[in-house]
Length: 239
Ligand SMILES: [Zn+2]
Image (cartoon, rainbow, N blue to C red):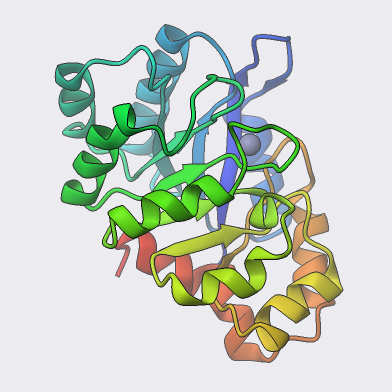
């Protein structure tokens, strides 16, 4: 079993396009079984509509794990409550594209709701943007100890987190974009951080490239399985 925790489909506001068919072709080519899928960056309205389209498709195609993407600045409690009853398996939020601070109190109600519904949140993280700084995630992880939080892009490229996150059982990191083989090995063995997730950020990187990184990181079989699917199954309640 292999689960890719980070894939985009649809159309980006700047023109990037990737279809469900394109993704499926890659999945079949590299023997990847399931994928967490959400829209690219766009207006709140379009992201919600595209999320609903992905959810609809997932009813016929069980390899699709549908995630909801929206703009926290523009969504009402009623709207979000209604959306998450529809069957999404997780939430994707992008603090720099949607211009919001992860740990600003005004978004606490969203985290509270996701914690209550047992819905994981995948945050785009990167040190180069102040809104997306992964250290902000640590603040909400303390406040919501049962909320499952995934930091995208290998600790958002802040490698000091490899050590810091050991004490946060509810935080995971995907390995898209910024992971390298030695970094994956060090996170796993030097820092004993086992909450890593296979993720490509397709179409921004090739699923195959990320699989090669995992296979070339000198991991034992059990640790490889954690990254390829066991952690994802746990977060997504697939078992
Ligand atoms: Zn992404």
